Image 1 (tube, rainbow, N blue to C red):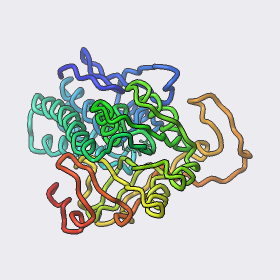
Image 2 (image 1 turned 60 degrees about the horizontal axis):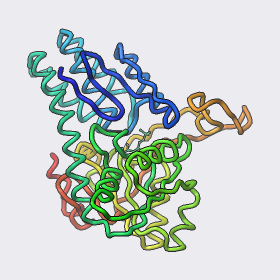
Image 3 (image 1 turned 90 degrees about the horizontal axis):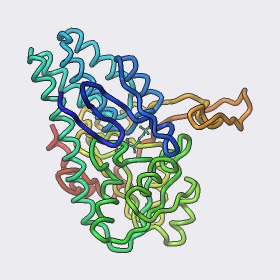
Image 4 (image 1 turned 135 degrees about the horizontal axis):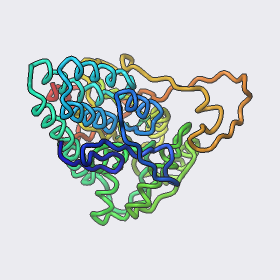
Length: 341
Ligand SMILES: CSC[C@@H](O)[C@@H](O)C(=O)COP(=O)(O)O
């Protein structure tokens, strides 16, 4: 397989290396992926994360073992193992299912390698197309709020919501970004802040519970978030805390956009209630996990509920920014997402 480079993963000289996002922004640690189990582990502990990126990592791993000569049944076994690594982001399943179909059709390993390379290239292009459509919506001097991390750390390309922001910034829109810290794992405070810093976009981190006050003060012109799965009616799952932003945006009349490629659309899910939501280790809420050092503030015995995602109903969304354009609620009701069948 040819060399392929993204911010958080690279395939170089026959090895798949992953940037361990648990240690960002302070440390840059790369791991070489040696087995299916290795990759499942790195995905589950969020060493690599973000809906498109986990799909890309799995894709490159299948390409890698195809190149090493794995037979069809070994390839299919790896596909199944990776497919089950996280439940909510459908990009993982979508990318792996394309590879699975090619394997089941009896395509030779060279074709599987070529397909893995193609999926990587497509992910980069999807980001660029969304950034173009999204950046056109942004007015100069806007104050934009975003949640979680949706940038180059989360995709093979420039990102989804953050891709729109950095592209608009490059176009001279002179933005100010409010970065939601994103409890419990701080993907905003650690990763989005790092990406804004790298891109030279002016930003301020806020705790998630400060967003309401900012909106009441008129300090937020627009909200841009990513998605892990979009149902056919436009409801979508994203990092927990997204739904509360959408409710707040509705109350304060702030435009609320979701930015995601068609690889995030799941037409088999007819509404958001059918999206499987991952629940995670209670320790992530009780304290700062080992990855960031170890501090626990809650009692050892404390019970915790830790859903990693929530669902935002379509009625709270101003627009869906996909690689094919920007869609309104009316477009979605008229079946705009069916083009991705
Ligand atoms: C382009 S990334 C879109 C989403 O994957 C992102 O907003 C998100 O929720 C990531 O969750 P994570 O648990 O960090 O993988």
